[in-house]
Amino acid sequence: QRAMADAGIRVVYPDAPTVPYTLMRGHMMPVWFDRVAMAYNSPEDKEGMARSVEQVDVEIDRLVAEGVPVESIGVVGFSMGGCLALHVVYGRSRYAGKLALCGAMSTFLAEDSSVDALAARRFAGEAARRPPPIFVAH
Image (cartoon, rainbow, N blue to C red; front, side, top):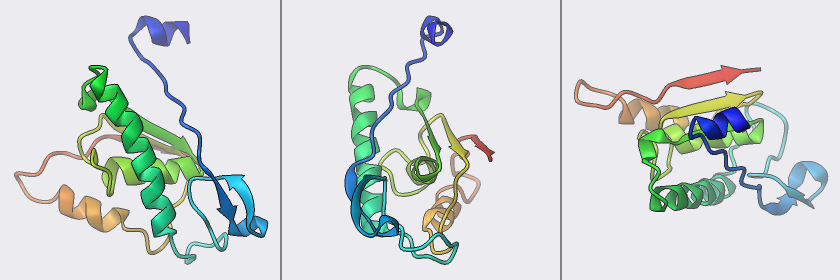
């Protein structure tokens, strides 16, 4: 961490909200969004994703207000957080397409996820900006 601090890198770790989680019989759990099944064709929780994207956008707003250029901010996540990172960097975030990078580890997207279509529109055409680089690993 000292090397990162010396390089001017700061890491912010937001916490997922505690909400009812269907996969745990509706018990309150810290999760970024709900899931009704562990399956590719399980529908994306659009309301929960929108709430979590907004939460990350507010964190980015704070960094920008502190003087951090948006193009110097990356969003990285693991599992649900990786899915959220993809939505923030390429999907519906106010900052989508403007951030420095995306990292998504051991993650997934639902079959009906909006990320692909949004990114395809955002980064299409000669005048479009280049998509931020991505690191994906399992």
